[in-house]
Length: 249
Image (cartoon, rainbow, N blue to C red; front, side, top):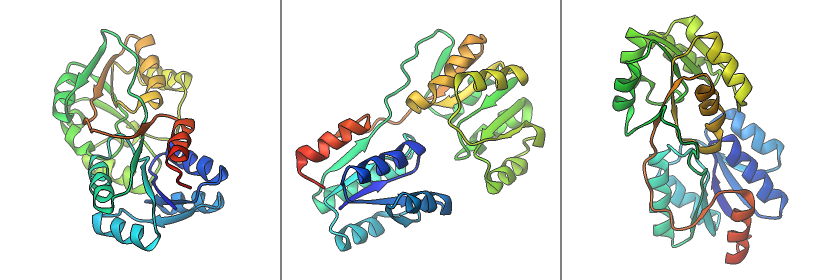
């Protein structure tokens, strides 16, 4: 059996693709909705934010032969936990990794952290924040002093947190993507955005970056932390080939 750490729509699709190709998959999920979608696809799942001890216990009980880290590119703590667990168990860890953003433009600024991103964004006035809810409090300076428009998954807890932080209700854009370039462009035009803050989530981020650049909007991308992945696949075919070459089903 293979344990796949879910966390994005892409990794869930990977779980479904592997399962339909005959691989025995146990996927993780952090929400009831995630568990439901996996269940509907006939995939076994375990729910919760798993720590090192939990992962070790599940792997030993389930005779897990390999781990696939398909979590979000910015799930740094989970990446480190997966590496540690795989090393302790003596099993391979495969990273399903979205490639970095390929776009290069003079209007793109790469920030090493949220603090640097906030400082740079202060040059603008209408700021479109698409970094997700985690660490949003690190951009409190923008929320307090600029027109901050925040796009998040429509989860009541997320919306409540933004309101508590001081984001105006009419500045909260609660939508579940993925979003194409046209929709991103329409939103940015409607709110008269002059600065976009986002993360380097690869091809998923490119439509909004392209939309911003087409409107002359400054783009701030919070850089990823670098990890030394030993086995990496960037698409479903590569992951399947890696598993087949290892003889793991």
